[in-house]
Image 1 (cartoon, rainbow over the protein chains, first blue to last red):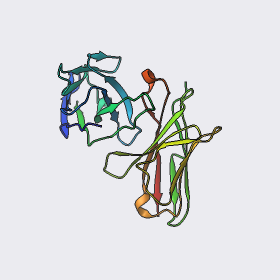
Image 2: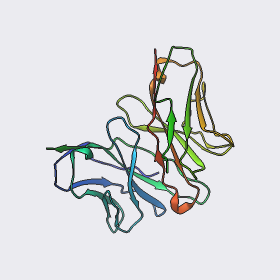
Image 3: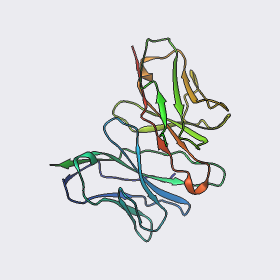
Image 4: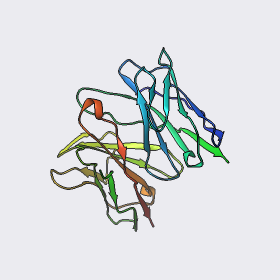
Length: 113
Length: 115
């Protein structure tokens, strides 16, 4: 799996949009970008994933650059409950089985009241 | 639809004892993954299983650790003769087989403390 680079920490004011960047310059054509978050010591929570098109769901939006070398996770209206460590993961999808996730150090997002 | 279940949530063992961690995947999921998170570190992959088969155990320590996912019942991660360095949070994730629906969903974890 390709490596990702994320800022170690970020702050965001409550109610504002939180934009979390991720660099994955060595991503290959069959690798997807996944985002998970871990609130305190709970189990990681799936947020969103994409291949090359922008994606949106009830939790967040994922913007992937045209060259696929970087992406941004957007939490449109951050709340205090969004304080967590956010992990950007690139993961291949094969026809032979599901692939493991390789977690980096992530971004510690703190929402400020 | 119930999520991934893990038990126990907390487990305390003395050095040399055995630890058994259980994981029940989400309904309809046939793939199980185990990850370990040491204090103040990120999650590390340990093993990937399908029913009755170990597919990838590249992250498993060579000794004392084993995993199974029988045809019936939960997946079990077994740690024999535990040492203090085994103290960690152990997370299980599950996914479906379908290539378009293979997102991994995690359980709440088991926190193992070795005294």
